[in-house]
Length: 97
Image 1 (tube, one colour):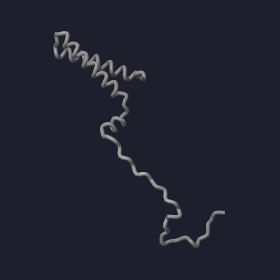
Image 2 (cartoon, rainbow, N blue to C red; image 1 turned 120 degrees about the vertical axis):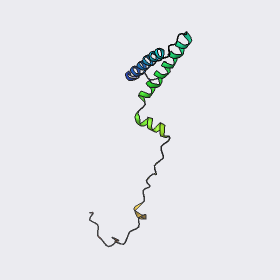
Image 3 (cartoon, rainbow, N blue to C red; image 1 turned 120 degrees about the horizontal axis):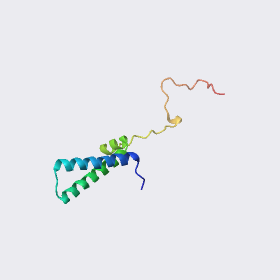
Image 4 (cartoon, rainbow, N blue to C red; image 1 turned 135 degrees about the vertical axis):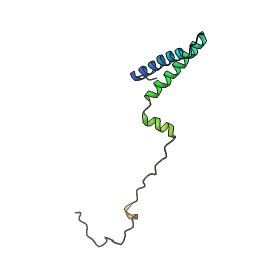
């Protein structure tokens, strides 16, 4: 498992602390079970933010749009199969030596 980056630690920790503090102040909980539930919610939110920070923008767009369509492959055509048009160069001499 790769080690977390500095950005992950900073954003995740800040999210946990601020969201838990704000929720506790706004909800005015008094029981121990409610405090544990709020703390668990803050940890979950911090984890989601930390994981979201590391995902590149292009990958986030691809994940939201679904699988990318496969582009058609270019098929090389041999020179012998290329048809000559009205200006045929059969009678011309080559400049190569």
